[in-house]
Image 1 (tube, rainbow, N blue to C red):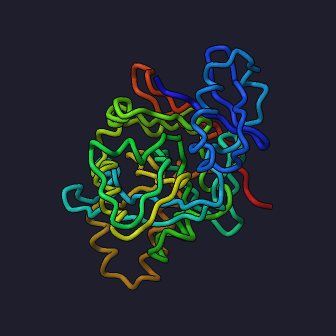
Image 2: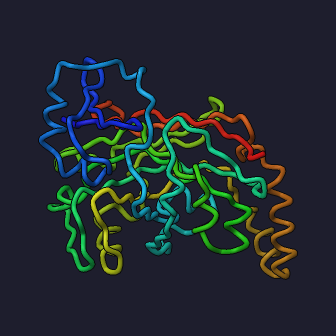
Length: 312
């Protein structure tokens, strides 16, 4: 049975049928909490609870930590952007952990950003160190992946695309909402990873809806590649890609071919002129909601709700 961990500014909690039970721990980071399993177990069986609605929840993943993300990792998303899933390489990029924000906090669009996009993603949270050279298999995956969270890989497309890099465009403060819960899983539960359905709404309009079975590179494959060069520590976070339905849209193939022949400045000016007419990009006051769960509800990472605000 899964265990759902919540966090407020000054405490950790476990979700129980009766409410939220406080964890008696000195842990201040996610990594430290995951090392204090007896305290988590004790809270899960405690009858001393309060209403979850009384808690001001923040991200259950604490900063600083490593935030790594997989690029174009859902077949539907690759196809939606005129790519070929069969030829997409396993690719990572980094985000600053300063971009982490709470599950109900505002997403703030910087003043110089015009095309603000959303990407619901499953976040893997690690509970054990993985030095470079660690061997990850289907049998030992659960020894390293402690749990899962809902994340939104918010993206400034008009920064990302012309610079052909992701770090800045995805690292502004509030660009990684996380939570509301960190769901701890055992090995059998983790085997249901591909049953998880990712859904995202903007102002009640369902934009993304796909299971993790659409993933091109699943966690074992990703971690085998990542640990060839990147150390991972308890409390670190890996975002695993997003399905089709983001605001970013590829131009029709003939237009794309013509644009490839143009000078870069002209090409990007034409592309962004077209994207500016796309009403799906996030605007001030938009409400973004995201959920990740199995269809039978056995694993449920909760519902994230954030409001977009333009920086003044």
